[in-house]
Image (cartoon, rainbow, N blue to C red):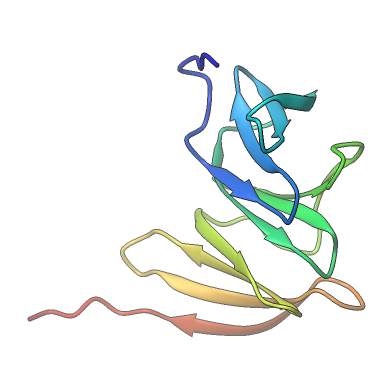
Length: 130
């Protein structure tokens, strides 16, 4: 498997497959490290990815946008209910999506996933000055 400098270093797994970004494509990889499906990624550079079991979808963050990607890569959809920020990382619990910003004045934002993706809470993270 070869990767170009257009590939992201981010990767994520669900119960069955690994998802990577390779040569301008999202690639689903099986246990034998064989690409079983790929879909062209036409959006900005991928910063981070996570898996939501409740939505049965991957969540991909770029510098400004958040995308929902179906498990089989048949649909890539921008999540309109989340406003653009300088996102750095993401994680999911059973019912929530957590997004962090990577600025000096960083924060974590929680969004509920069910019944729709809506803002719940904001935590501000301050830099320790010691």
